[in-house]
Structures are given as structure tokens and as C-alpha cells.
Amino acid sequence: MNTGTWRQDYVRLPAVAQKRLILVPKFTVRRKMALNSQEFYSKHILNFIQEEEMQRGTALVRVLKGGGHRPPTKKSLKERFPFSKDFLARFSEANLDVLSQYKKLYADLEGANGSLQHEDFDEHFDEAVFAKALALVLRAIPPGNADADRYHSFVIGALEFIFWPNLIYPRKEFPLHDGRKRIDITYTNAAQSGFFWRVHTAHNIASSLIMVECKNYSKDPANPEIDQLAGRFGTNRGRLGIMLYRTVDNYDLMCFRCRDTAQDNRGFMLPLGDEQVIEYLDLIAMDRRADIDARRQEILLRLIN
Image (cartoon, rainbow, N blue to C red; front, side, top):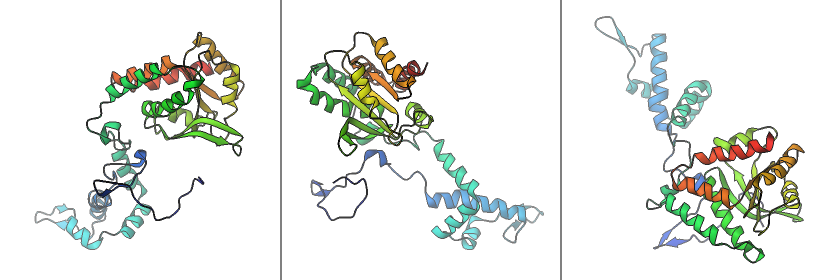
């Protein structure tokens, strides 16, 4: 039973070449801790204390023969203010600006706040080749009920790859209302910047979950399919979804249908067919992943203007 809570248990770990493995979500992984307590203590706290001691003219300040003054040595400060977790906690509580500046230093470094990229897990991974391969797989899936599950499974992985690291933890056939309704796929919105961050912070869109409906139809999705996705929105789950389909004769009409739902205050749906998905994969293959953000924004603007 999935309760959504942590529990303790003894289990057998998977092993490869007699080495035990612990599997963790890749979104939570970093190569090393960005914030380091020893570095914070040595390079930030002690520097701050040096300036404080100089301004106050304490006995730790060194007096030069010519009458000048020099800050106390870090060695003397370490003896007076020895490193400990308790000291760091008390200092940080009393000097919030120092801790904030330290965090900002790392926030400004490229990649310091971000998740690991796909190539970080495999140095031989070629994102461009993988994107092209996904496009070929999508084209090879026939529309229709016989291949609906195959299309559904493809979409789960393809969207996580396209929108990584913003959409994580995909769940298939997410149950609602005690199982009386189901959402084809849900993703946790973990965006810290960009499109999915902007919509998550918008007061009328708030989207902790991104809901996805997959329609492997050979015909155009119409109002019933759009109403189905709109019925999955909620205050706690969010009000942004993605309608995945294969092809459509009139994309403008599809956008107008989704726009009607938005203007009726029933939620916001981004219509994405094979054409848009392949366009995103082509952008990744051309090392233009950042351009996908603008493409999503263009679709959203069509819904609200």
C-alpha cells in the first residue's frame, strides 16, 4: 500500500559484481555537498569575526611596531571560537546575513543549485543521439487502441527526458477520488526556474502536480477529451495539465478548445501532439534545450489571450 510516508524496514539490497547498491531518485543526487560547514566556518565566519574584532579594537587585534593594526590571526580565532555544530548554529542564528551571503555565493555558481544532468550519470551518454532515437520510436508507434499502452509508456519516459529536471517522479494511472477516477500520468513539479516555476507561482494556475492525459487516437481529440482532463484538476493537485495526442487537422482549433476551458476558469491545458514533441526532441538534438521554455510559453499565451 502506497501511503506517501517514510518507514523503516530491513531489506535485501540489490548487488552488482558483489557490490551492494542503494537506489535513490536522481533528482536528489549531488556529486558533493554544495554547502560545507568547515568551509563556511573557515572562510566566512572567521572572516566576519576578524572584521568585527578589528572594528571593536579587541585584545586579539595585532599591533604593529609602526603603530598600525592587523586583524587577529585565524589561528587565534579558532582557539577563541572553536568549530562545533552548536557554534555554527548559534552564529548563523545571530548573523543571518553571513549565512545568506554564503548561500547566495553558491546559488550564483553555474550548476550549483541544479540537478545532475543525464550525462553526469553516464559519461558516454549522448543526449542528441538519444533525442533522435526517441523521435524515431515515437514515429514507429501506430495510433489506435492496440498500441495505446505502448504509447502511454513511451510518453512517461519521453516527457521526463524532455522536461528534466523540472518534472520528476512520474506516476502511471494516478488514482483520484478513492479510485473512481484516474489520471494517465502525473509528474511532481520540481522546477526552480523557467516555465514550470512561473506557472507554479501564478496564483490562478498553481501546479504542484502536472497532469497528463495520453490519447493515442487516429482522430482529433475533441471537447470530451479536454473536459476529461479538466475534471482532474483540483486546488491541491494544481490546475495545469498536458494533453498528449498523435495528430490534429487543425491545431488552432485545438488551442481554441483549450482556451475555452481556461477562460471558463477550469484549468490550463497545453496541447502537445507528435509535431510538438518531435520539435522539442529536435531542439535537444541541436543543443537548444533552453528554447523549449519559450515554446511552452507561446502555447500558454494562446490560452490566456
